Image 1 (cartoon, helix red, strand yellow):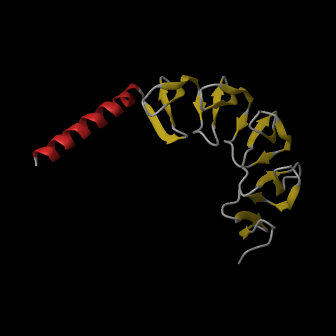
Image 2 (cartoon, one colour):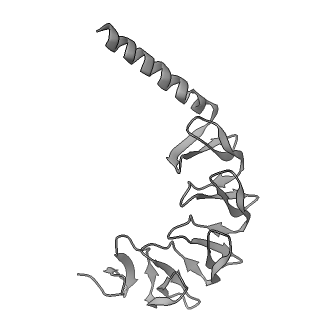
Length: 192
């Protein structure tokens, strides 16, 4: 019995010590890629599981890590930082989404497109709205206000004919057609 009590006390002390660093922050997010977003005095950064600061608390906002990068916001512009703390892409976009399927949606001057993990434009900024890539396709809205889907090369995969379109999940996406929500597969075929 004494062994179990001693073991329980040791574990409790270790847990308390391991998590004591969390008291230094007003907010601690979930772990993604071994890092957690933390907030203090309206600035955000990222710490590792020991509480060591990896990305300093210098940003106005940030998204959780996805595919090795976190979107970070400074002075009203978004960019990306990698998991080593290096600013991989200087904040320059008015809006971004996290990386998904190797690409991230970016917006500048009211137009949306996609960048790759090196920060290069992979699909030009020519859409009025855009969503995340999933299952190799992304929903995008053209200048006529119609939604369709493109593949990772920017080629139209499903025609621009919907009033709205969600990202795919497990091969299925919701689209607004004739005032009703319907589900489609990756080929644009309506599902029953």
